[in-house]
Image (tube, rainbow, N blue to C red; front, top):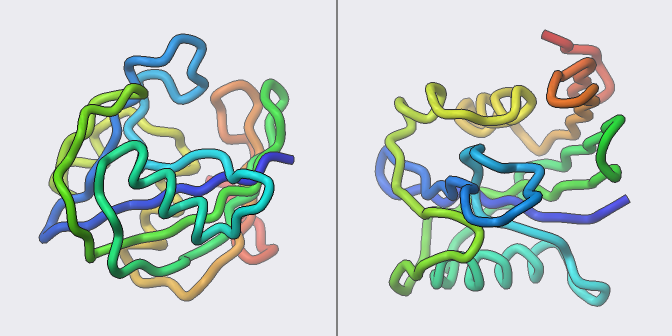
Length: 156
């Protein structure tokens, strides 16, 4: 299982999102997601998240929260444990990202953008201030076949 990070950076009523349009063969192609990526062998989730955010955005986070662990199971891709963070403090200036286009998107507009069905579940949890959670998402192709929050079936 891969270990990855994902961080939603907040500024006012907007999230900093990455529209994944530049990388060939990207399983997130055309989706809108937060910055993040694979953990290196010697990194904690926090260290990996900070490194990935800096590499992809040019921003150094100064205040963040570890919000949950998302387990992805797929019939097409390797399984993944994704460490989910939010941040609302940072310094620096945005850079061009080689994986997509960075854009501050109003939270109210995010739901209308292309994203994974399971992402909609954890984004609701983030926005409602849910305590630390464990979310399991099982995909058949790009279809969400099963979802469990803290061990309870919540399949839409």
